Image: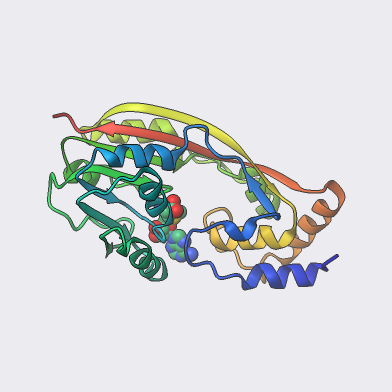
Length: 254
Ligand SMILES: C[S@@+](CC[C@H](N)C(=O)[O-])C[C@H]1O[C@@H](n2cnc3c(N)ncnc32)[C@H](O)[C@@H]1O
Protein backbone atom coordinates (compact mmCIF):
# COMPACT_ATOMS: atom_id res chain seq x y z
CA UNK A 1 0.00 0.00 0.00
CA UNK A 2 1.39 3.43 -0.97
CA UNK A 3 1.74 5.89 1.92
CA UNK A 4 -0.01 9.27 2.15
CA UNK A 5 3.25 11.08 1.29
CA UNK A 6 3.87 8.87 -1.76
CA UNK A 7 0.34 9.32 -3.06
CA UNK A 8 0.41 13.09 -2.56
CA UNK A 9 3.79 13.39 -4.31
CA UNK A 10 2.38 11.36 -7.20
CA UNK A 11 -0.83 13.43 -7.48
CA UNK A 12 1.23 16.63 -7.36
CA UNK A 13 3.58 15.55 -10.15
CA UNK A 14 1.16 14.59 -12.97
CA UNK A 15 1.21 17.26 -15.73
CA UNK A 16 -2.11 19.15 -15.95
CA UNK A 17 -1.92 20.25 -19.61
CA UNK A 18 -4.58 18.91 -21.94
CA UNK A 19 -7.96 17.57 -21.11
CA UNK A 20 -7.35 13.85 -21.32
CA UNK A 21 -8.53 12.03 -18.21
CA UNK A 22 -6.96 8.64 -18.98
CA UNK A 23 -4.55 8.93 -16.00
CA UNK A 24 -7.56 8.40 -13.68
CA UNK A 25 -8.18 4.85 -14.97
CA UNK A 26 -8.48 2.56 -11.95
CA UNK A 27 -8.19 5.49 -9.49
CA UNK A 28 -11.39 7.47 -10.08
CA UNK A 29 -14.58 7.13 -12.11
CA UNK A 30 -17.21 9.56 -13.38
CA UNK A 31 -20.54 8.48 -14.78
CA UNK A 32 -21.11 9.70 -18.38
CA UNK A 33 -24.08 11.94 -19.29
CA UNK A 34 -26.89 9.94 -20.92
CA UNK A 35 -27.05 12.21 -23.99
CA UNK A 36 -23.50 11.39 -25.25
CA UNK A 37 -22.08 14.82 -26.05
CA UNK A 38 -19.31 13.71 -28.43
CA UNK A 39 -21.80 11.66 -30.45
CA UNK A 40 -24.20 14.64 -30.69
CA UNK A 41 -21.33 16.95 -31.62
CA UNK A 42 -20.18 14.55 -34.35
CA UNK A 43 -23.74 14.22 -35.71
CA UNK A 44 -24.25 18.00 -35.81
CA UNK A 45 -20.83 18.40 -37.45
CA UNK A 46 -21.82 16.13 -40.37
CA UNK A 47 -24.32 18.85 -41.36
CA UNK A 48 -21.92 21.81 -40.83
CA UNK A 49 -19.71 23.35 -43.51
CA UNK A 50 -18.09 25.87 -41.15
CA UNK A 51 -17.64 24.88 -37.49
CA UNK A 52 -16.18 26.49 -34.37
CA UNK A 53 -15.32 24.84 -31.03
CA UNK A 54 -14.95 27.41 -28.23
CA UNK A 55 -12.45 26.66 -25.41
CA UNK A 56 -11.41 23.46 -27.10
CA UNK A 57 -8.85 22.53 -24.40
CA UNK A 58 -6.37 20.19 -26.11
CA UNK A 59 -8.88 19.62 -28.93
CA UNK A 60 -9.26 15.99 -27.83
CA UNK A 61 -13.06 15.88 -27.69
CA UNK A 62 -13.50 17.70 -31.01
CA UNK A 63 -10.97 15.48 -32.81
CA UNK A 64 -12.52 12.29 -31.41
CA UNK A 65 -16.06 13.42 -32.30
CA UNK A 66 -15.11 14.23 -35.90
CA UNK A 67 -13.16 10.99 -36.34
CA UNK A 68 -15.98 8.85 -34.91
CA UNK A 69 -18.69 10.49 -37.03
CA UNK A 70 -16.62 10.93 -40.18
CA UNK A 71 -17.68 14.60 -40.29
CA UNK A 72 -15.17 16.86 -42.05
CA UNK A 73 -16.33 20.50 -42.01
CA UNK A 74 -14.62 22.50 -44.78
CA UNK A 75 -13.60 25.12 -42.24
CA UNK A 76 -12.77 24.01 -38.70
CA UNK A 77 -11.83 26.65 -36.13
CA UNK A 78 -11.25 26.49 -32.39
CA UNK A 79 -10.39 28.90 -29.59
CA UNK A 80 -8.27 28.20 -26.53
CA UNK A 81 -6.96 30.55 -23.83
CA UNK A 82 -4.29 28.51 -22.08
CA UNK A 83 -1.06 28.38 -24.17
CA UNK A 84 -0.08 24.76 -23.30
CA UNK A 85 -3.58 23.60 -24.33
CA UNK A 86 -3.57 25.77 -27.49
CA UNK A 87 -0.34 24.09 -28.55
CA UNK A 88 -1.79 20.61 -27.92
CA UNK A 89 -4.99 21.55 -29.77
CA UNK A 90 -2.98 22.71 -32.80
CA UNK A 91 -1.30 19.31 -32.92
CA UNK A 92 -4.52 17.34 -32.35
CA UNK A 93 -6.53 19.28 -34.95
CA UNK A 94 -3.87 19.70 -37.67
CA UNK A 95 -4.79 16.47 -39.47
CA UNK A 96 -8.42 17.62 -39.59
CA UNK A 97 -7.46 21.01 -41.08
CA UNK A 98 -8.32 22.82 -37.82
CA UNK A 99 -6.86 26.17 -36.77
CA UNK A 100 -6.67 27.40 -33.17
CA UNK A 101 -7.03 31.05 -32.15
CA UNK A 102 -5.52 31.91 -28.77
CA UNK A 103 -7.96 34.24 -26.99
CA UNK A 104 -8.96 34.78 -23.36
CA UNK A 105 -12.13 32.95 -22.27
CA UNK A 106 -13.98 36.26 -21.81
CA UNK A 107 -12.63 37.96 -24.98
CA UNK A 108 -14.72 38.71 -28.05
CA UNK A 109 -14.42 35.98 -30.69
CA UNK A 110 -11.91 36.81 -33.45
CA UNK A 111 -14.31 35.83 -36.27
CA UNK A 112 -16.67 37.60 -38.65
CA UNK A 113 -20.37 37.89 -37.88
CA UNK A 114 -22.48 35.08 -39.36
CA UNK A 115 -19.42 32.93 -40.11
CA UNK A 116 -20.44 29.58 -38.55
CA UNK A 117 -23.11 26.94 -39.19
CA UNK A 118 -22.25 25.25 -35.90
CA UNK A 119 -20.64 26.52 -32.71
CA UNK A 120 -19.85 23.92 -30.04
CA UNK A 121 -18.33 24.17 -26.59
CA UNK A 122 -17.88 21.61 -23.82
CA UNK A 123 -17.38 22.82 -20.25
CA UNK A 124 -16.64 26.48 -21.06
CA UNK A 125 -15.46 28.53 -18.08
CA UNK A 126 -17.24 31.64 -19.47
CA UNK A 127 -20.05 31.77 -22.02
CA UNK A 128 -20.18 34.89 -24.23
CA UNK A 129 -23.76 34.44 -25.44
CA UNK A 130 -23.82 37.68 -27.46
CA UNK A 131 -20.62 36.74 -29.26
CA UNK A 132 -21.92 33.22 -29.95
CA UNK A 133 -25.11 34.68 -31.44
CA UNK A 134 -23.07 37.15 -33.48
CA UNK A 135 -20.77 34.57 -35.13
CA UNK A 136 -23.58 32.09 -35.93
CA UNK A 137 -25.18 32.41 -39.35
CA UNK A 138 -28.97 32.80 -39.35
CA UNK A 139 -30.33 29.25 -38.86
CA UNK A 140 -27.03 28.11 -37.29
CA UNK A 141 -26.83 26.18 -33.99
CA UNK A 142 -24.95 26.26 -30.73
CA UNK A 143 -24.42 22.92 -28.95
CA UNK A 144 -22.86 22.93 -25.51
CA UNK A 145 -22.40 20.71 -22.47
CA UNK A 146 -21.83 22.86 -19.41
CA UNK A 147 -20.94 22.44 -15.75
CA UNK A 148 -24.00 23.12 -13.61
CA UNK A 149 -24.36 24.87 -10.24
CA UNK A 150 -22.90 23.03 -7.23
CA UNK A 151 -20.79 20.61 -9.28
CA UNK A 152 -18.80 18.30 -6.95
CA UNK A 153 -19.93 20.37 -3.99
CA UNK A 154 -19.37 17.42 -1.60
CA UNK A 155 -15.66 17.56 -2.53
CA UNK A 156 -15.50 21.37 -2.25
CA UNK A 157 -17.19 21.20 1.18
CA UNK A 158 -14.93 18.35 2.38
CA UNK A 159 -11.81 20.37 1.53
CA UNK A 160 -12.98 23.89 2.46
CA UNK A 161 -15.90 23.52 4.87
CA UNK A 162 -19.47 24.16 3.70
CA UNK A 163 -19.56 26.70 0.88
CA UNK A 164 -22.53 28.54 -0.63
CA UNK A 165 -23.71 27.36 -4.07
CA UNK A 166 -24.17 30.17 -6.56
CA UNK A 167 -26.95 29.89 -9.15
CA UNK A 168 -24.75 31.62 -11.76
CA UNK A 169 -24.07 28.24 -13.40
CA UNK A 170 -27.66 26.99 -13.35
CA UNK A 171 -29.30 25.90 -16.64
CA UNK A 172 -32.08 28.46 -16.07
CA UNK A 173 -29.53 31.29 -16.07
CA UNK A 174 -28.04 29.90 -19.31
CA UNK A 175 -31.48 29.72 -20.97
CA UNK A 176 -32.26 33.33 -19.99
CA UNK A 177 -28.88 34.53 -21.30
CA UNK A 178 -29.26 32.60 -24.58
CA UNK A 179 -32.71 34.10 -25.13
CA UNK A 180 -31.51 37.59 -24.22
CA UNK A 181 -28.84 37.20 -26.94
CA UNK A 182 -31.58 36.38 -29.50
CA UNK A 183 -31.16 32.58 -29.62
CA UNK A 184 -34.06 30.10 -29.40
CA UNK A 185 -33.39 27.22 -27.01
CA UNK A 186 -34.22 23.93 -28.75
CA UNK A 187 -33.06 21.44 -26.11
CA UNK A 188 -32.11 21.49 -22.43
CA UNK A 189 -31.19 18.39 -20.41
CA UNK A 190 -29.68 18.08 -16.94
CA UNK A 191 -27.94 15.26 -15.06
CA UNK A 192 -26.06 14.73 -11.80
CA UNK A 193 -23.21 12.25 -12.37
CA UNK A 194 -21.64 10.09 -9.67
CA UNK A 195 -17.91 10.67 -9.23
CA UNK A 196 -15.87 8.24 -7.12
CA UNK A 197 -12.23 8.61 -5.99
CA UNK A 198 -10.29 5.50 -4.90
CA UNK A 199 -7.08 7.17 -3.71
CA UNK A 200 -5.93 10.58 -2.52
CA UNK A 201 -3.47 10.97 -5.43
CA UNK A 202 -6.50 11.08 -7.75
CA UNK A 203 -8.17 13.71 -5.52
CA UNK A 204 -5.02 15.89 -5.52
CA UNK A 205 -4.58 15.61 -9.29
CA UNK A 206 -8.29 16.32 -9.91
CA UNK A 207 -8.17 19.46 -7.74
CA UNK A 208 -5.04 20.70 -9.56
CA UNK A 209 -6.70 20.12 -12.92
CA UNK A 210 -10.31 21.16 -12.26
CA UNK A 211 -9.17 24.41 -10.68
CA UNK A 212 -12.54 25.87 -9.80
CA UNK A 213 -13.54 22.98 -7.43
CA UNK A 214 -11.29 24.41 -4.68
CA UNK A 215 -10.18 27.85 -5.87
CA UNK A 216 -6.45 28.42 -5.27
CA UNK A 217 -5.85 24.71 -4.51
CA UNK A 218 -2.26 23.57 -3.99
CA UNK A 219 -1.17 20.35 -2.31
CA UNK A 220 0.93 22.37 0.16
CA UNK A 221 -1.98 24.61 1.22
CA UNK A 222 -4.45 21.69 1.62
CA UNK A 223 -2.26 19.00 3.21
CA UNK A 224 -4.50 18.60 6.27
CA UNK A 225 -7.81 18.17 4.36
CA UNK A 226 -5.96 15.76 2.02
CA UNK A 227 -4.83 13.77 5.07
CA UNK A 228 -8.48 13.56 6.24
CA UNK A 229 -9.45 12.48 2.72
CA UNK A 230 -6.81 9.72 2.76
CA UNK A 231 -8.22 8.47 6.09
CA UNK A 232 -11.79 8.63 4.73
CA UNK A 233 -10.88 6.58 1.63
CA UNK A 234 -8.95 4.04 3.74
CA UNK A 235 -12.03 3.57 5.97
CA UNK A 236 -14.83 3.78 3.39
CA UNK A 237 -13.06 2.44 0.28
CA UNK A 238 -13.75 5.59 -1.77
CA UNK A 239 -15.00 9.19 -1.68
CA UNK A 240 -18.18 9.91 -3.63
CA UNK A 241 -19.42 13.23 -4.98
CA UNK A 242 -21.61 14.36 -7.88
CA UNK A 243 -20.74 16.53 -10.86
CA UNK A 244 -23.58 18.55 -12.39
CA UNK A 245 -23.96 18.75 -16.16
CA UNK A 246 -26.45 20.22 -18.59
CA UNK A 247 -26.77 20.11 -22.34
CA UNK A 248 -28.08 23.17 -24.14
CA UNK A 249 -28.79 23.50 -27.85
CA UNK A 250 -29.89 26.87 -29.22
CA UNK A 251 -30.58 28.18 -32.73
CA UNK A 252 -30.17 31.59 -34.27
CA UNK A 253 -33.45 32.38 -36.03
CA UNK A 254 -33.19 32.11 -39.84
C1 LIG B 1 -12.79 23.00 -18.73
S1 LIG B 1 -11.80 23.26 -20.13
C2 LIG B 1 -12.66 22.28 -21.33
C3 LIG B 1 -11.87 22.01 -22.57
C4 LIG B 1 -12.57 21.20 -23.69
N1 LIG B 1 -13.67 21.93 -24.25
C5 LIG B 1 -13.03 19.86 -23.18
O1 LIG B 1 -14.20 19.70 -22.90
O2 LIG B 1 -12.21 18.95 -23.06
C6 LIG B 1 -12.24 24.89 -20.56
C7 LIG B 1 -11.16 25.89 -20.43
O3 LIG B 1 -10.58 25.92 -19.15
C8 LIG B 1 -9.29 26.49 -19.25
N2 LIG B 1 -8.30 25.67 -18.56
C9 LIG B 1 -8.26 24.33 -18.45
N3 LIG B 1 -7.21 23.94 -17.71
C10 LIG B 1 -6.58 25.06 -17.36
C11 LIG B 1 -5.43 25.31 -16.57
N4 LIG B 1 -4.76 24.32 -15.99
N5 LIG B 1 -5.05 26.60 -16.40
C12 LIG B 1 -5.75 27.60 -16.96
N6 LIG B 1 -6.85 27.40 -17.70
C13 LIG B 1 -7.25 26.17 -17.89
C14 LIG B 1 -8.93 26.53 -20.72
O4 LIG B 1 -9.10 27.82 -21.20
C15 LIG B 1 -9.97 25.63 -21.33
O5 LIG B 1 -10.30 25.95 -22.65
